[in-house]
Picture 1 (spheres, one colour):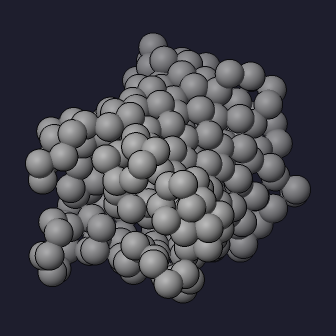
Picture 2: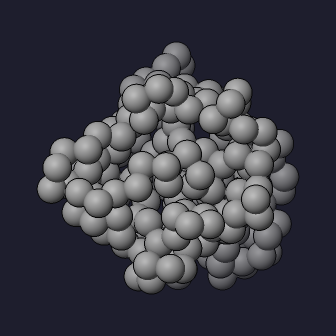
Length: 252
């Protein structure tokens, strides 16, 4: 397919901190000449990340039986440092999980949140490797976030009529069963019919999710991802609907 693989090494990524439903969103949006590209995942962190000049913004919302509004969400910003092509890149994110303010999580708007860090490098063969931490540097008295460490590897595959991003990782905390210690596997597959449309299947270590990501404007770096979470209805909870919207800028 006519797919510019360099997007994945020039992309800026948003990682929002965990919501009370233990969801996290990473919405990738292209920058510079690589605008308008769909995201390869809904909740699972990928090994691709932002380098110097990349900035991402985004919001995440999910239905839940957790408050009077039956919904909750998060919002955040991520910036890239370093150079993942030459050496390593560092993606630094800050996000708040009190998107709905006192009508949702019980906290005022922006009162609860955490930071995320991802150290990543691009490898030969259209691949990348990363180590990171989510939910660190928390703020807020009623913060549901917990620190989780992970490692992930991702690779781009050109399959002719379609393309795919396969991402596999291992992590603790939110990637593991509730109450369990040690590490657990997670992963995601994004199948691209065009650079602007992708189908997503993933397992977070706890939940199985599926969705579709699309970039409505070819020349504008906006990405919308819609999906179903907890499709296996684990832990006695219902399947829910999640929506993520990301916007990326590259100042290089």
